[in-house]
Length: 308
Image (tube, rainbow, N blue to C red):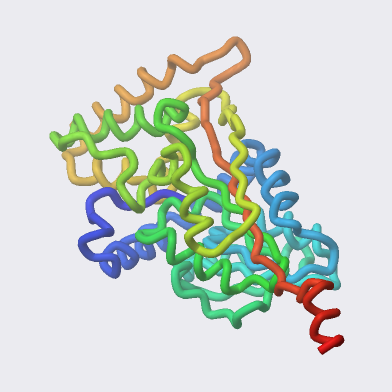
């Protein structure tokens, strides 16, 4: 998911979340309509995420910031009819699409609940695994989100998040934003600003947040996930159909000024043309952690107590 660059989350988190909800309510049909492209792009990363979180047959799994639920279907298939999946999202419109997609796929084990990812409406220690695909970096306070994921896990359970990596390894995102900001006459933004696409891309940052949230066995894996489409224009069609910050920026311009910006983006993104089509580079970070099981008394301590 993408977010609104015109509201600083550190200034007014609630207004920021309200804007996000509104944008995703509006963009939900377009995002859902691009599910095949999303699946092709993120298939390998999604499988790795589920593996690293420990999603297995019969498990209870929480899918945070689930969107239209493409990855929710993968979770439901993995856990099988004896398992359970709760998909949450801030947008009720996009979550309704997730529920409908699960119903159409025959997954009766999927439920949805509209929820702020930083205040999850779930009982403590009630899930075996938690996943969050391309959502955590958009939280105004991702540490709060991770603390909630940790709280939701049963002792010994695992979580895994997928976010964008370093700015220099995500040139499509940086090209879109820099071009839009230039045409709008806005100063360049810090790519690590909270609540933005690249906010967790600084090396070591997300590992530190996982540990601060209470997770153990924290590890991050970097994965290259090129977005393959017939042309740069197809990529821009995808961006236009999402709750893209680019749309928010260019929506303030005249039609002719916005058209000029889109045209420059297409020209710059053509640098990623290949003989077989367009291939936009993306670096993604998979971070996994575990909620520690309760500590068992050591054998020596037990024996000493018995002897006493």
